Length: 288
Image 1: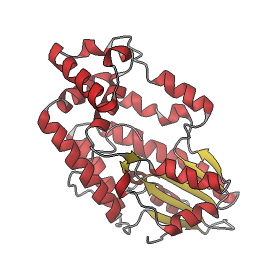
Image 2: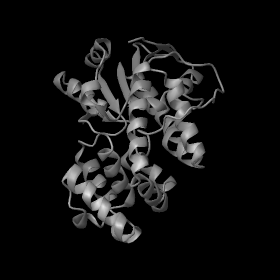
Image 3: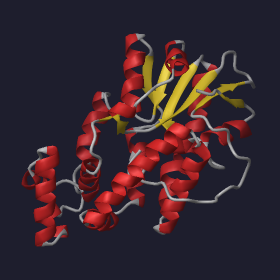
Image 4: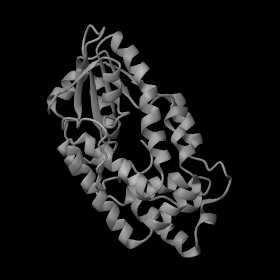
């Protein structure tokens, strides 16, 4: 879920296996399953006026025994660990990473856009600051698909669970250093980059609603390849996808389950769809 997943839409031609159908909603059946389960690719953040959820998706949630998301931050223990993870383990104040003029600009942006006092958060990690600045680049009120799906599950008294532990979810931090976060922030402070971020966010939204999950994956890989950071692709997608499969299988065997995670996890050779098919399941598209 972290780092650049919102800003990844650059053309690419990675195709190592058959192209997937254009939909974010999939049904899993076959093998030894008594009832089908569902996969749904999300966007972790989207402008509220563009948010929409097909009726068949919400109906599938209400008919399921459990809704799995990447990680449930409503869990008290996860919330506590998340608070600790925000701190900069290097023990270096944020303002020590930037020039005087850069710090002034950061302070102004945070105060104007988020009403945050930069001076009071000097013990946070650069990656947190990067997330905050990215959020200020999009001029709209945003919502999270995961939060909306959880509301549906809550109203129907459907159990909500996490696909991974907190430690697994943020293991990607080991593939993303303070130095890389600081470099990105310095780029963000340039006027042209702010405009570029808005453009990428718009492209991402358009791509998502075209439901071309293979291209979403391809563009993610292309972006990080252009940054010479393919290790991040393995950390945030491939490694996590492979860890999810046995957990997905276990839940499906216990009854109808609904799995929601970032759409980039669906595509690719090591995407959830392909990995489940390799395990002998039938994974078919459900068009919205």
